[in-house]
Length: 162
Length: 376
Image (cartoon, rainbow over all chains, first blue to last red; front, top):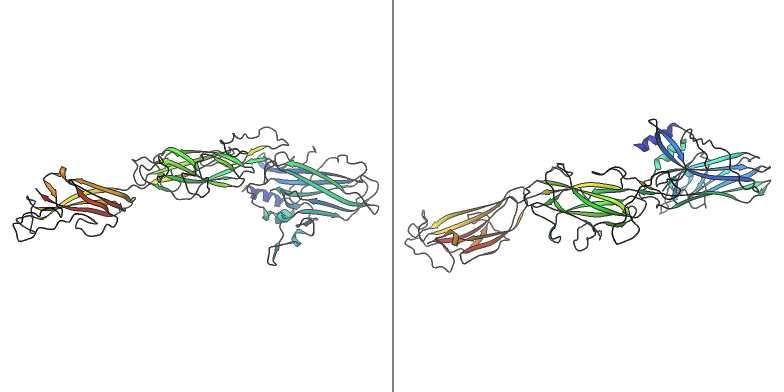
């Protein structure tokens, strides 16, 4: 029942927006600063209504929903191009979705890539089934636009602790 | 990483599609496992490939204590009045439960048994009596059947994540109970620290209180069982015993077969007459079979009759009707001698004591022991 309520909440809203503060300083020599964070998404009761709260991953149990956030920023004076972000999934995390839906995924350890809906898992005797989020081993974003001086961005995906 | 994140709205259209594939996590990732997420970035500046960048974060999976207990089936355990666990090798009254470790760690489990109060029993009927002298054993050889020589452990040692094992409750049934009496019994399993095989049951598990820590916290996640609370590291379930007593009635009748003056025509019980006794054992319908039904009749207490054996001298005969033959001790299904009691044994007479074993008398059946005497 609770799962139903949560999924209803999900279906009502369309976008997660994480309002974040300033980037932490990175390595001075690199053109790009990276910051990877993970949060646990919890449903809490607040004033009789259910609210979603993001917590630091201090109490994490199997089945908990995680949100992984990678922030990047160009701290050099020149644009960065062919920006490719690769995120192998930790073995104990099952992939659910990315926020922007523009990712490619791999279900074979990074050998082959594509949209999840285009990938197929062999099930023997030459037959295949459609890949599921649980099959994902790697996530990859390719950012086509230049990342100009001082610009920054954020990539987010959701997973579940196995 | 101390920034406060404010969630404005949740989820995306993808969630609607992805939501269908929520997997069933059984025990899940083992407590203490580190989850390390590393991201790498490749890029170019001014057409030149730059050194790959990476970023990572790590956290630890906490310990979720969870378990279930359930009766092994939805059938009652049928018992007889007085059936007990004094000698565990002789048909003890056993109820069987299944304890499942749904925690993400290997754990021990402490076990305890209790009587349910009067009220509805899980498999029908109402609890109206208590069993005594509870004994609880673990199905150490994992065959689901109580083996008294093997299944001697009294707590569950090192039950794997998502593992389950049968647990047996044995309680003594008072010999005063009657058919359809019901006793419900409750098994409570409590999670204890695992980590070392053998020895005694592990230490009590304490739930982490106060603020979350970056280390491994312990969280109780179990539901409320029949008699325990929510999130208490314990779970309980109920099964029941139902009494099936054998309702035995015994009736002894006699019929004069012959007397020395009237012969077979309206014989009277005068000295010298041959009388047939019938001991009829009946077991009421709806009860349990009575086994090993043994009968002994001491003719010396009856007085003035003598067992009419084949070796005995036939009574003096004053009529044209010959005296009936001696018939020994026989067993049948009625006092007229009809029917066959195949499992009767030990039928005979010695020193004026007639004895025999009718074997099993099923519910609704009657079996008889027949023998003849002469009146002194």
